[in-house]
Length: 170
Image (cartoon, rainbow, N blue to C red):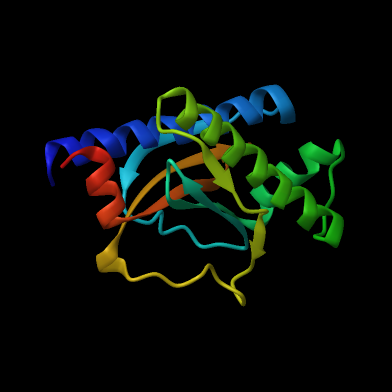
């Protein structure tokens, strides 16, 4: 992989981690553990997910991926209560957590001179209704995994390969 592209992707990876930690610690008031930033899809089995498209200075798609337990904890933390079973209100809260993380990433992208970045509203997904398909040969994916009370979740961002190469100056 080109060194400039790798540098750009590592910058993106640090942005993911910063935004997730900020939302977890300052908005949800939950401690999280963070894994390493890696290239490629997270490969985690999803019970709940949400995606947000970014456009403008950054063209990408952000994914928040969670197990049942971590989704309950993330959404419950936003609502301020603990629940044992998934419901529509938790689903909305999970989408809002994804929106908050993506917003934190957008702020960082704009602060780092990537220009103005727009966001779509979050779209929730489940294993029966997966994320939109993409051509694996035409995208580059950066992800980071996290834990919340021992339960995993992940954040990943997908870029069109031609955009990532251009943005990196590669």
